[in-house]
Length: 70
Image (cartoon, rainbow, N blue to C red; front, side, top):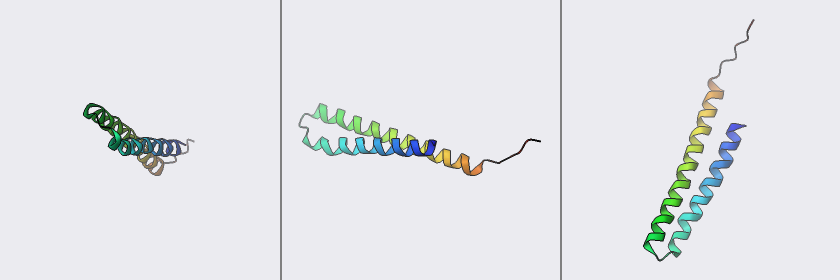
């Protein structure tokens, strides 16, 4: 379940980041454009963190040993 949530969150974050990068071309004020880049890069960072955590979850599932207690 963690992998699915991480993937969904990453898709949302990257979608917001792409929208932010695309809309920066319409901004004429340099201060607002810089803030827009910061906003878009922040969402890119969040998406990347989500992908990394999803990859760690996959790694944990694959390397987990199934020990039965007797």
